[in-house]
Structures are given as structure tokens and as C-alpha cells.
Image (cartoon, rainbow, N blue to C red; front, side, top):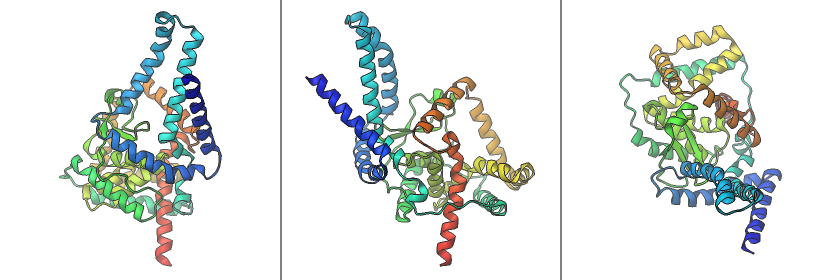
Amino acid sequence: MKWNRRRKILVVFLVIVVAVQGIGGLGDYYAQAVYPCVATVLTFLSGYVPFAIGDLFIALSIIGIVAFPFYAVRRKNKTVGYAIAGVGEYLLWVYVWFYLAWGLNYAQSDFYHRSHTPRYEANNDQLRHFAWRYADSLNATYSKTAIYDTLRVPSLVVAGYKRLAQQNMGVHAPFHVHTQAKTMLFTPLSSKVGVTGSMGPFFCEFTLNGDLRAHEYPSTFAHEYAHLLGITNEGEANFYAYQVCTSSADRTMRFCGYYAIFFHVLRSVDAVLGDVAAEDFLQYVRPEIRQMASADRNYWRSKYSTWLGNLQNAVYEFYLRTNRVDGGRKSYSQVVALIFSWEQRQGQMQRR
């Protein structure tokens, strides 16, 4: 009887997940009314645990999925069908837990609709102006003697997201005053696949790669914090991290925010304006910053495993496409278009 009841509950949860994903408006209702309550509770509970519960849960789940069929068949004398059914049911429970706890945020409207921001397409002159103005800010905030105090980052990021929420930018205010980022349990493996941070959806916690360099920490923290607040699109998470960091009163935070999108801006200039313009843009940036970017690339390449990285990229691309993220992994670079559209909107409002 208990077995049947559990399966009925599972079916109900599956119907809810499918309904929210498929019926217009329900995704926004979940993101605005349901998720904040779920996240407030889960982050409060997981906050008492000093390590990444989600990482441990995933690792133990993989071990259990592999080991259970052997245990059921050899030790409990169950049929292979029974073992497969057990694994299948467990995976379905994990599926509904993922979506009910965080994943249904994928069904919400995008940034343009949430913030009532028109989508602007930059022409060549506008992109050139944007890129060189960005480079001016990047150059101006750089300091050879900068001290990157990672201990101050959480409070600065929380304060930044409070500001964004007050500006109706389509993101929640922080659910808690104090927020901690946990270090990935499997940092070496994460570095091998090029992952610097991740959102732990099962317990509403986020983790950062222990190999992060100090100047990468603020923007990565702010990016993952956006995911914690229900932002699923990677480009949008980059956008909010940029806004939080570059609006800070702390100069090093501002530099980290500008620096975090450096390669995205460079790729946009190269793709739209061509190789010559990209080289001109690169030379316009301070040589110290170019050296920093080169050192960062070499640093992460030294830890990267090509075959593991390609495997992870393929899996993540499939994951993003399955959740209807436009552009898949390329969505990271949408940050430039988002910043441009937001600045155009702000400029129009100021002229009224």
C-alpha cells in the first residue's frame, strides 16, 4: 500500500512539473511566488552544513544507481526488472526534486519581459562605441596595487542585489542577509572540465571552484548568486553579476565586474566588426590587463582535460537545450546584448 501511495504522489509531482513547463504563465507564478519560499527554507537549512551537500548527494546517487542493481539481484535475489524499476523510480524522484526545488525557474519569462526592457540590436557604430567605452571603464578601474579581499565579497554582492531589486531589474532581492558560497567537493575534477562555479538545485546552495583566482572570485560569486535567486539563463546571470560588481562603491569589485566580460566583448567585436577592429580594441586595453587575461587562460588550460571538457560540454549543451535555453552554452555571451539593451532603456528613460 505504501509503495502504491508513493508512486501516486510521484505521478502528481510529475504532472505538476510538466504543467508548469507547458502552460504559459505558470512558470512566472512559480518563479515569483513559489520559488522564493522554497529557496528561503532550503538555503536556511543547507546553510548550517559547511560543505556542499548537493555535490555529496550527486556523488552518492551515482554510486547508488550503479551499485543497487547488483545488490538487489545478488544479495536480495530480486529480478533484473525489479532492480531497473527501482533505479528508474529513484531517478524520477530526483527529476521532480530538481524541478520543484529550482529547475522550474527555466519556465519563467526572460529578462526582457521581466524587466520590461525592449530588445535593442546594436549596429556597427553603436557596438564600437559600447566596446571602447567599456574598455575605458576597464582601464580606469584597474590598479597594480589592488587587494582582492574575498571575505568582503558576500556582503557586497548581497547589497548589490538589493539595489538591483529596487530598480525593478527582474531579479529577486536576496532571501537572506548572510550568504555563503561553498567550495566544490571535487574541485580538481571541476577544473579539468572548466567549471568555475555551479548552482546546487537540490538544496538551493551554490558552490565555487577552489582554484579560482582572487580577481575572478567576485564576479563568479555574483554570477552563481544570480542562479540562487532563480536566474537560469547564463547570459542573464553574467548580466546581473556585471551590474552588481560595476555598481559597487568598491573599486576592485568594479574592475572584477568589467574584467569578467572582457572575452565576451572581444568576441562580439571580432564577430561583428572584424579582425582588425578586434585587434584595435585589444591594443586599446591596458597591457597589464591583457597580460592578466593571458595568464588566466594559461592557468586554466594547465588544469583542463580536453576529453573530459568535451564530454562535459556536450552534456551541458544537452541539458541547456532540454530546458529551452536559447543558444545553449552560447547563452553566456548574450551578456553584451543584455547590457546594451538595458543601457539603451536607461538612456531613453533619462531623456523623457
